Image 1 (tube, one colour):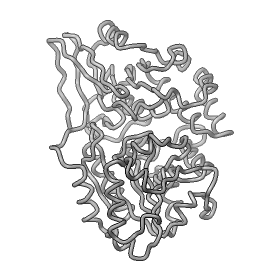
Image 2 (cartoon, rainbow, N blue to C red; image 1 turned 180 degrees about the vertical axis):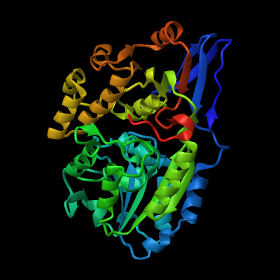
Image 3 (cartoon, helix red, strand yellow; image 1 turned 90 degrees about the horizontal axis):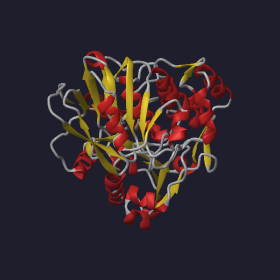
Length: 429
């Protein structure tokens, strides 16, 4: 843990990631500041960590390939950092070494309900060599589906003799943690199954109290995923990783799905949560740059994590470029002016993912004043109830003129989860 003590007495330069660049601003002499951040381990070769995970899997990959002719390798999409460019070539080479023929391997991009990945994005995910030599498929949540009981999944995935799940495990605002079976649901599930899963965010017309980052017990979203994926009888192997704040692999595990996922969850819980003995009147949280601030839709993690460190009367400052815009229907901006319970009613009557993102953001905006530095049109930001910051100069002016008391800074807010009161569970946001 990197939990720097409050300090003051001289101007300090603070650097935060923003999109594909970094921005600098100055902390005034009289401002107390504390940095809530995750540690940087001594450098370890990323590929070596992946090889070690494959070589020490609780059930070796060879055990699965011995009876398999066709393999579906499920990878995460472009909207989050997962290390695919490191581990996918290693995994494909291992499958080839074990006798699986190249033409019998399909890489399936777990899009959930996101748009299809472009050729450029796929090359970024797996590299030009694999893009040119492998069959790669964008998941389509409306077509090419096979149903297990009432839940639809990608037919290519379920039609393979072996399913290989991959991805990064991080804190997740709904399922507790990403990774594991989330590659299947919502990753390669039918639209109606994805919506059914995310609708469990609600208990009656309120947010379910167990739906929080890092929350596993009694979490209906997670239990829906685990219960429905357990019905799939196709053999599955899993490779999950944990990334540091520079989006580099710092831990990897492989083998059976629950063994792999649980090992990575424990690593995230121990190393990516930051205990703090207090909440703060001002919290500045950067999403950590691209792709974590890809769009406003992707900002639910940094909003949730930032609010976790904010006192009841506190104020949030969020840095997220949102180069891809809102990634929600522009008509839904009108929902921000409605009462929260009315938005919940609209959602439960006609559930939609971008509407849920609006509701999640509204809960925080109703609790805290939120200043938002982004490339989004300021007039649209104002409609949400947030206060737009149009450039670094306006951010600096805010810090110089309004920020008082102690400012908590989360340089990597999409990955770092502050736990107030000596590591207690996150507050219900």
